[in-house]
Image 1 (cartoon, rainbow, N blue to C red):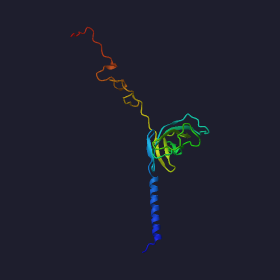
Image 2: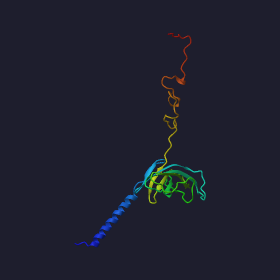
Image 3: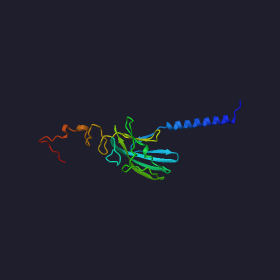
Length: 209
C-alpha cells in the first residue's frame, strides 16, 4: 500500500489540529486560583506576569457621574503589580459574586472615583485603584477575574473571628476570665465562696516572731 505526499500531509495536518484541540481543552478546563480577600494572586500570560490583590469588598457611599445605579453600589480596592514585562490591567474582567453565583459586572461605562487605571504598567511598577459594582440582589462575598471564558482568579470573603482580649483567646458566648479566676466568675481552687477570705476569729492568739 502506497501513501502519496498529499495523504501524508493530510494526516500530519489532522494530527496537528487534534493536538491543538487537546491543548485548548486542557487550558480551558484549568482550575482558577482561589484565595481570601487581601491575598495576592498571580496571572501568567506568556512572558507577562501580573500580581493582583483585591481587598475591602463593601458597600460604597459615592456617586458616579453619569451613572444611575439600579441597586446598591459596592466597591473593592485593587493593587496591580507588574512582576514581569509591561502589563495592562483589564478592569472589565472583574466581577462581584454571591454564594449563589449571582454575578455583578464591574461598572466600566462611566468614569468612577479613584478608579483603577487601565494604563500599562512597566515591570516593577504598580497601580492602585477602586472597582465598583451595581448590586441589585444579594450582597456579594467574592470578587472574580474572568477572562471571558472562565474564572481565572477568585478572592473570597471569610467569617470574622469573635473578639478577644489582646493576647488571650476568646470563646463565643463566654466572657474572658480575669487572671486567677475561672470563666463565668467561678471561684478558683482554694477560694471561699464569694471570693472573700474569712477574718480571724475574735481573741485568737497572735504569733510574734
